[in-house]
Length: 299
Image (tube, rainbow, N blue to C red; front, top):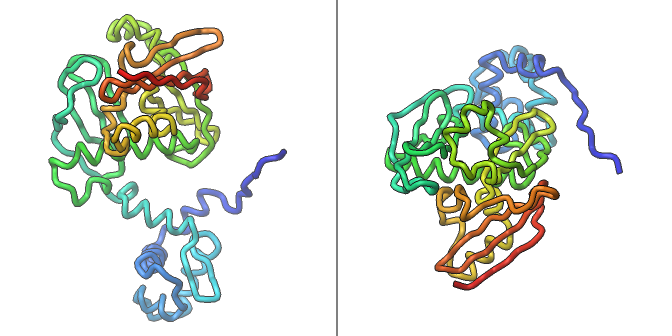
């Protein structure tokens, strides 16, 4: 069966060049704020341009790619909505940073203190005592309207959102198709000399890599995070009165050999265990992150 192949209708440079004018951006913003189709005259009035011919010229530059002409009037296409969403999110227009924060939860690996930093549009949560860390790009607008003390919880939800999208097979950056692999953690350390900073069991510790077929980005996750949305994990928590959506990212992380370990190498089998009130749920996966076995035990 052949797959669906998108047809490229414009060069990227031509598409972005169409946005290089304040009037065209104003058109997109007016349609975004209206949240409905607008007649030509209504849209021109909202933009504030008296010259009908000049306005039509700019609108024509957006037509078909960012704006569609419908029976009800002019409306944003998906590309037009994406551009507006990126503007509101601050990816193109904002910057920001704040002094490091210390989340209340201890490091799940060693119990050390953690620190959350946000600079250069990137959130990094790292431990002061071990190599455990998490990092991802976050548009500045994500933290807008939140108080400083709310930032760790907001960052936590944002991490969870990203990992849910990865688990569903979509690249966080370009929505491309992902391939998942489970590999020993030591294999992902670029410089062998850096392995001295990791625990001895790290070569037996499973990590999940996601590779986008379109843009090539390769995010990683631990098994506990990667499988948090699996039905067996969700139902295990639910049966014990726990809504897994209310657990933080750091409660789900499996970053020690007692919770996650490679059991076999050929073929690869790795296991991760979730615990609630003394009860365990263990999932065994293969090298493609497909669940091969689920075991539950009561404490």
